[in-house]
Length: 463
Figure 1 (cartoon, helix red, strand yellow):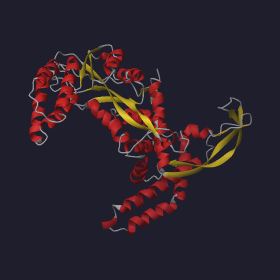
Figure 2 (cartoon, rainbow, N blue to C red):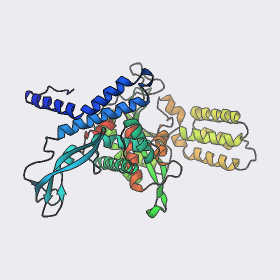
Figure 3 (cartoon, one colour):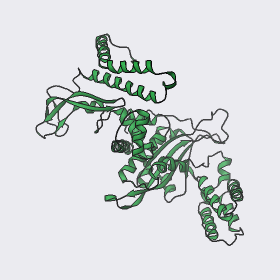
Figure 4 (spheres, one colour):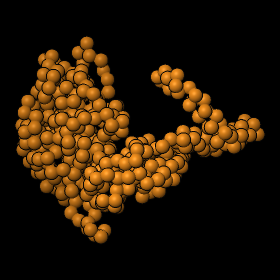
């Protein structure tokens, strides 16, 4: 039902449309009624539900067709301005066309204009209705892009779309639709667009009563395919996030809630990626936080870019997940035949790291009596050097004493969920544009509720 009151002058149109829909869908309605009447309870649900859905889609598609039949669908007078050469394009005819919707194919006629100066034609209705170049409606474009972004492959995305939505489109349509939507999103990101209205996150306070905003940055490699399907050097996909994690011991006036986060990802040069994070940071009210804290994995250049683009950052913490993972690996080399003993050793090292920091743990490991075993000495030396180089970002006792989040692998998890789970599966090779587009879509989909809707509703504005 419409949400707004129906104008009186529309009542006659509505009554006529209702009658036309009933007449056009009469056969499908009769088939639906017969299906229900002759189906026993044991077979009413399950496979029969798909038949019912298909009939409901046919009725809905015919309803749209009946709505479009008497309309002029893009006719705007005898002539319009040609978007290609700015000359006059004259009305030529109404041409039969098929668009693809969430409820199936819809056939109707739309106005066609021809510019005799540049020889190009146009259908104004397509732009007004938001049809894609493959004649998908905005809703079908949205679900096709989601299927292409979250499924393991575009082929699986097409299968998922048919199974869950009852809509059949080709693998290539899912691929091109997804990549084109991702490219449009990338262009909006690069233009500094704001998705939806500004938010004012309730930044959680540390033990000093200061409201803390977190910004995190990491990178992960993506295998690339060259021209003609040949080999090509891989590219780094950067993943950034602005987040508001709940502290271990929140203040009495703070409500525990899931971590709020906005993600950004793409195959950018690092120096170009950092500035793009400032827009989502500003959109959630990061400037109103009392304290800015950065987290990263210690990769080359990440700390410099965070400080350059977020000058109020007081400290950049090495996400605890990274040294913890390295300690687990070293413990397994130390106790290769006993998994329980290896985990117990890794747990004690991790606890020491939390309680004393990276510098102390590095000293302890340097004095450790390492047994002679292939690869163990080299691995220990490498880890000790890592701890010593990163010691200035591993003062975990101080961070924890002030109530700061030392990381739980959130940004590392983002690399896996945003990039790895779709772009780094076995045997995958990507064109650069396609990988770039997919990174943007998946980052948006993983962001807090409302961001995905804002993009598809065109609810965004540029600076």
